[in-house]
Amino acid sequence: MLESGDDEGREESAAALKYFSIISFNMKVQIAEAGAFGPLVKLLGEGTPRAREEAAGALWRLVSMMNESNIEVNIATKKASDLVVLLHTGSPEGKEAAAGVLRLVAYNDTNKLSIMRARAVEPLVELLSSSNPEVKEQAAGALNAVASDKDHRKPIARAAEQVSTKTPPSTRSSALSSHCLALP
Image (cartoon, rainbow, N blue to C red; front, side, top):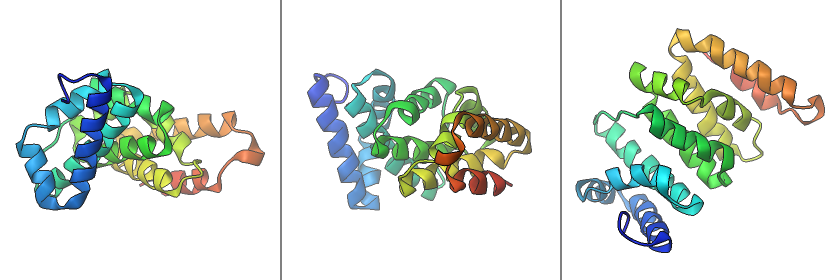
């Protein structure tokens, strides 16, 4: 259904995988072993807005399982760009899932570079001002992971400066400055 179904079927299939992946570690393993990872990644760039969000939610949980199992996960710039679209246009849940996936994959230099090339930094910085604490947490985690490479710190600081100048002072979140100051 993820690959061959109609839009509604793809949405429902991705949603089911997301919810099944919450049940247990073993369920995540079974989903991955059934070959759902590739179709979920593909859905990020081709699905309806709801399907993309559901796919990101399922992938977030699967990538978490893969990290716990020391399975290397690589992200291409194009797929990181698909997640960036969700950072801009998704619901709070979709934004949290997209930022969560980026946080989890930003552990190696290749993935950090893909995230930088996908222009994820500015929307992640913008999410630090979100009213949703879970979105803020994932965005801060993703930025912190990317900033662990000292070459990426200046672009992150520039993005924070650009975001703060675009946002009227009365609506700026103190979280923006505190998270940016906490970057390594």
